[in-house]
Length: 464
Image (cartoon, rainbow, N blue to C red; front, side, top):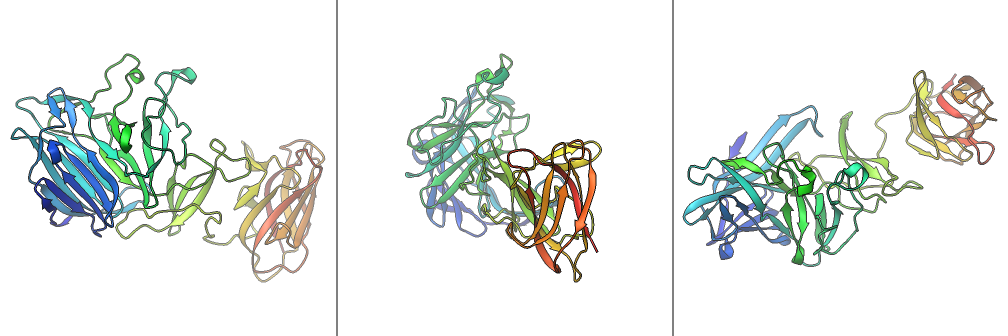
């Protein structure tokens, strides 16, 4: 829904600016020296130096002898829409947009559409017809992103094509160097989107592309001197002899959006990717991501972490930071109902395994391992019995249930004997001890012979 018309500001001859709805983020577009360029400021501080725009096609070189035309389509966009299968089902999109034409030799060469939100910038081209030509091949994009002096990079180099396992590269991420210096080009083939950059002590810039479909190819970042990164097309060898890496496009036609924004700033999580996902549950929004912080973790030893967040008023993501604490419970657990052992807030040492008859259960339990279960509500009366389903092909071991810490008061203890197999389940029970009421965290501490696997655990519950 279009709500209002706003004005792009003409700073001087050959220069035009567009600001975000909160007026903190500004894009300045220029035709200085006959070259199309743009730069980005946040609160008046430069986050992107003058960066090139334009491209070369089979119809001509649209990187030089360019002149700014009159901006059109300047709008305030306030849209709301619903989609069931995206990160947030109810979306409000708020931004300022403008169409900025560039002319060459008195004729319109191309149009750049900029969209400026409160914490992100996106732009794309519309290629114009030249005479009666109805299609064109884009040979090269000049589109670039020039980082200010003092910036550092967090980029995954793209592997050379048709190498690696079964000649499948580039097919997956490669390790990156934290806080690397600009001016490099990875392994010689540039970098895979997204690209993350630290702008000295000012903040961060994340660069990616979106809206890619069959009408235009996906891109990569090519590194150059002086902190410049440009759009590169796929490597020729990726096509294995079939077709071309240069996109063909009908005229007038549009490129994908190139996007600059940030959701989760780079932090020391021990992993070189985060692979985020978002879910809404019981009125809360959660961001799931990778971390390598657990013992033995690292770049390829990643675990799932989660943080709660609230969307900005305009529907965009806030900056979300990784924490060690995680999220608060959204409810309490009833200990008098059967609880699957894989229901936990934290664990050490154990693994989960599937079984067609039983479902998921906890396995690989050794002496000193434990599970933590949060917000268990015992009510006003203490439990009398503790029940589990466990299995062991060896000597078994002991389960201690402790209150609120790994060394807390023991409220139940049950010995697990050999049951004849790792999936030969036996129901066991013991007396509960002590006066337990109210809400507590429970720690299931496992003990037994050191160095060997003890038993598997399927479920537990208390009874009165």
